[in-house]
Length: 330
Image 1 (cartoon, rainbow, N blue to C red):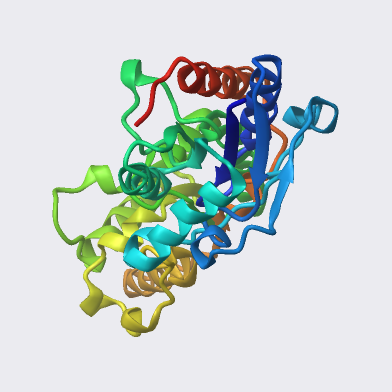
Image 2: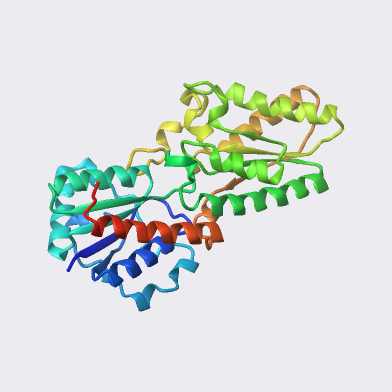
């Protein structure tokens, strides 16, 4: 009997439970045993095999309708330490896991690849790509799961802020999650009809001067005023913050980083920095304007998936099991 382990790494995304549920159903019907591994690679890296649960169809048959992750998630990275990577392989051996499904983004995919190599053929591994940022280049321009649900909810937030801005005659700078790509910010802005969007892809490669980013926003506000409108919403991808010149941001070196060395962009007050800079520049022009700022991201990650992601993730879970039981790996 094949034993399939399932784990989730990285940030949450709508649809994780759809993959877990469909994979379990497909595996059990295919004669396999399924072990749910809690908290990504966290416990396996420590050689701790107690944080697991055998998954049965009766336990997971309806979890695809729920947000979050039934197996939780973590950003634990086993590739930084050979001993911890070896612990992962040994832990899976102890559990009898000979097939592994990992659910996550680029970092989890890298970890899964390393585990597959370290197992030297004893473990088949299939990775299911997941991220609301949509920053993995899947074939045929297929989005990563969770993106469409996140965009739906982000666009609703921006739509409400557009009406608030019109009603109160003010501006909002809305910073939307997306570490390396502006897909979510652009998708939400276009769907809601926001005044403008600003994403890293708008700028040439290299660092983005804070003066240039703020000038884009200032110019848009001045142009709107010239057209008789003193309100608007600018949707800004948080990835702009990662490309700003560090010299322009005091204390950037002290910002917390995750296990993969990435700056926790939520700790960089991008909206506040841009708001204050633009407000000062407008003041020098004699323009007084109220500018609010809002971060949108965490509230999108654990919402219940829309029909698109419900359908898509169940296909992904079943497909992962089909690939494993057909002898595919890597």
